[in-house]
Length: 110
Length: 108
Image 1 (cartoon, rainbow over the protein chains, first blue to last red):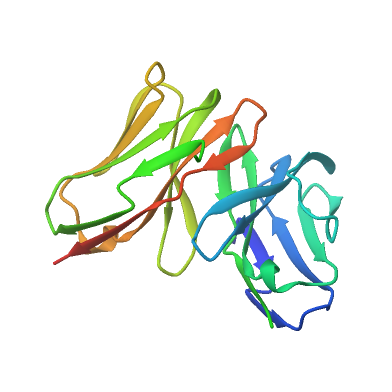
Image 2: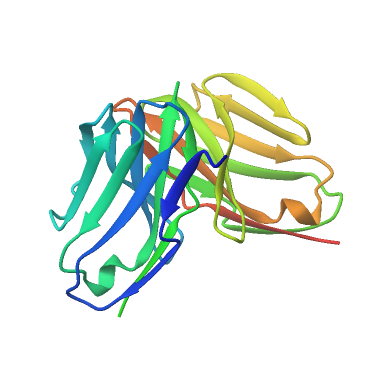
């Protein structure tokens, strides 16, 4: 029933580890996004994909690699995690400019 | 300076009060969004507008393209309206640029 889902909801890991966050949407949208919300609650776009093709890469370190196996999925893989990567990561999809957000994944790097 | 500025940053109100949150932007846009983020963290899109005014229940959003300004109004506010309200503009490059949010608390 959920429109945009993300897993896991919480992720606690050590510095230097590699982790992935998965995102799926069942709305049939062509465009999907990853956003990062920092400790001050400021949201910023990271990536945008349209129909599996990368459209926006917002100067994100190349430790972050999005992967879109199909139109309904946009996963985020992060290598060599750093303390500054701690944040809430939101996946979203859109059609006709209206955005639908996933519930967020709270990543804590220790 | 952020390309999208909101005011106030924090707002407290008594139940029943009329609330206004303002948003100014400095870039070319194709649309402006108002989002609501609940204390639990979920983000919901309230409005998308590119001109004029939209109303949904007790919420009203207006935009003035010439002045690059938008307002979100809440009539007859209620404690369940307590949330962070975020203005975001759809830049001409198609990416969303977010304001810093307005934290609203409505007390009974």
